[in-house]
Every structure is written in C-alpha cells, then in structure tokens.
Image (cartoon, rainbow, N blue to C red; front, side):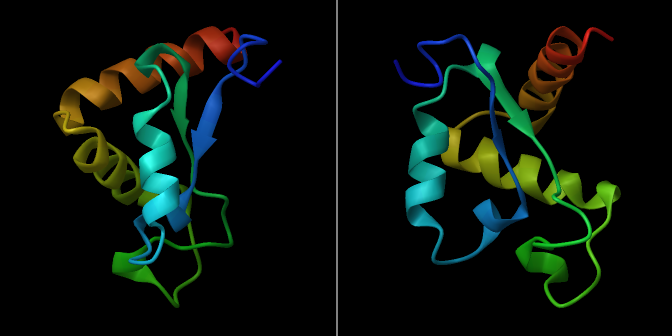
Length: 92
C-alpha cells in the first residue's frame, strides 16, 4: 500500500518552493487536505525567498504559501487545515 493507503500524513518542506520543484508541487496537489502537513526541515532546505540563509521554523509560511498556490487554495484555509492535521497527527 501507498503511504496514503496506510493512513499516513504527507509533509512538504521548503524545497517545494524551489523553481524546479514542479514535481513536488504536483505531488502536493494529489494529497488529500486532511493528510497534508508542512514543515521547514530546519536548519536545512531554506525556502526560495530566504535561500542561502539558515532555515528556521518561522519560514514555514513560505512552504505553506507555495502549497496553497499549487493547490489553488487560500493560504489561511490551508493553514487552518494543516493545524488540525498536526494536532491529530501528534495528539496535540
């Protein structure tokens, strides 16, 4: 079974913002919203707008914006969904 078939969450990091990450953004459109997470992979893979700097958790907003744009969704709505997903995934 696939990761989604097993009920796992799928997370995307800052590299989804890279110009050549077309396949990653396409993959993000295939993940059901209720199984999607966003991360930074700090201190590595800083998102495109801050590329070359040390990555930090606050930069997750860039990952979120890229995911929302790729999926054709509003950032605020996707952020709320990802917060619910994180709470469910990590038992928060």
